[in-house]
Amino acid sequence: MSTTTSAASAPITVLGGGPAGLATGFYARRRGLGVRLLEANDEVGGNARTLRLGPFRYDTGAHRFHDKNDAVTADVKALLGDDLRRVDAPSQICWRGRRIDFPLGPYDLLCKLPLSVLARIAWEQLSIPRVSENADHFREMALQSYGPTLAELFLLNYTEKLWGADATELSPRVAGDRLEGLDLKTFVLEAFGGRKDKARHLDGSFYYPKQGYGQIAEATADAMGREHIRTGARITEIAHDGMRIEDVTVNDAETLDVETVVSTLPLTLIVRLLDPAPPEEIRAVADSIRFRHLRLAVLGLDCPRLTPNASLYFPDRSVPFTRLYEPTNRSPDMAPDDQTVVVLELPCHRDDDAWTQSADALRESARSVLAAQGLAETADTVAFEDRTVPFAYPILEVGSHEKAERLRGYLNRFENLHLLGRSADFRYTHVHNLYAQAKSLTHQLADATPTPTAPE
Image 1: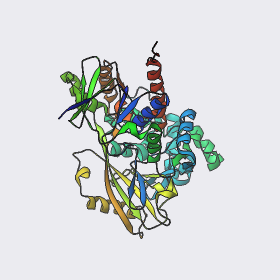
Image 2: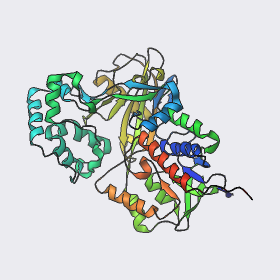
Image 3: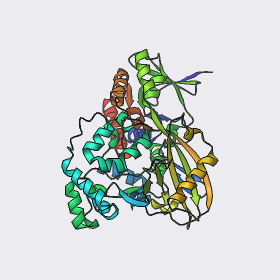
Image 4: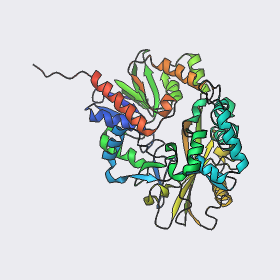
């Protein structure tokens, strides 16, 4: 039986309990706004949770908190106190039996690549145009920005594995800024200055919570007030009158009136949930946008550590996984003494064999990769878990930015609907940016909310 709940006590309804939704609820409450948060899963955190496997903890991604916004960093430090620690754990690429620093560092490349390869890279830094703002696709951007040798060795293969698409079909926006600073000047500076003069873009320092990255979500939820959060509340319909969102349906059973809606749901899902449905051409655009999903192979190992790295990357196509991360290198509290836990990421589409293979097959594949990389060859696997992470990454294909803009343009007609978050905006962003955006949005909403007047 359907029921209807009034929005009077919660003028802001947040859809989704990931970092963006929790930050919205936290900052809304701090401004004294009424808020309720609806999360489909039984726990908050979205794709930034920390999970348990026996005595081990691991995150649903190789997450780290970047100290890029002083105000947000101060807020998160206030939430976690001494449990938020600064960590120095660099990442590396596994390449032909060698470990190459990532982001790529000229000094490290000088030490580990053949002289002939280094000569080609150095020459290319002089000859490449480095004008990639107007590149039509990712391959063109990579070749123009980094040169053929670096692009082919470390960038193109990995990118195509990660996204499951040819580099000519991917937008230049998938590049990010992780190879920033690779030019002839930095090659010379690091060649003669040594590792102490490593470029600033190679800094491997970040913040990480004692009990795992999900501790940020949990602390934010506590500060928001758990009484304002409802888990197990899957949004199954979003009703509107053409100008405003009127109500949302939870679990196909309960209708909730809404006043202001902040949605962190995937952009394509929002479009599909609308009632009345959008025009056919809008639905077609939504159907053409794709997300990349992940399967995680999680292994608890009877050994102290595998590597000193935060993450290891595998650009080689013969390796099915794209990345390995070791949570104990972020916090020793993620595993018992003398044991460690590692997570291998396997990007998939839902129609891939990788998505449907058995947990046993995934486990054996993970063990084979560890052995081939010279890791944990003698360590016993004392625990294993197979975990799926749907909608892990929006796939930024050529033209996807314009498609997302069209969908956002359609949704902008709803004056009480606000979109926030990686999946809702269909763009890449970090948690510190999400918190900053949520803070800004709630300030706007607070300023727009009339102050109640006392009765005469």
